[in-house]
Length: 222
Image (cartoon, rainbow, N blue to C red; front, side, top):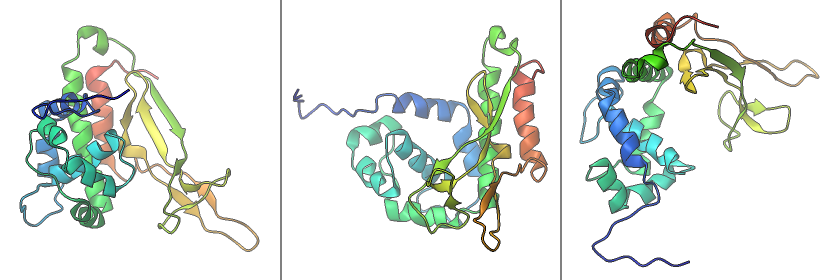
């Protein structure tokens, strides 16, 4: 099937992007990222939220690598949906990622958790009356970058990471304070093995934010 459009019509296959971006703005996440995640010394012209959302939206729209950002930033319909004139190019996004440390990641997770609380506060009483149920499980996250620090081969022969994920099963939202990975060093005649470790004890601020989110919107539960 072939579609033809007028020159004055702009369209893209990611119709839900504008709605997702509106939720991000209304929840205050954009401002929280700029206030809490301090990566750039100067903003010329992009802020931290521009970089974070640029990468996130690229993945949301099916992007597999930073190079796919080039397709998005040259799509007028994509830019119109976000209400912006330009986006960071893949090279600039890569430079931002290289500056992004574990401390910045912790700050970003705290901003996400705080914004999640604001969203849950707007839910009806039926939502807050439910019992909060937390799912805790490990998962395999494959990667094509076999030389990245911390990666080893999993039991099924796939290179990647093995994070511990804690999520609120009521909504599917992830409480990111407990994601981490530790790898046991290999010994003679023995391959390296996975050892999942929670960072909750190391990051009490983020852990408290996650539990505050569940406490605000749900009765204590299992």
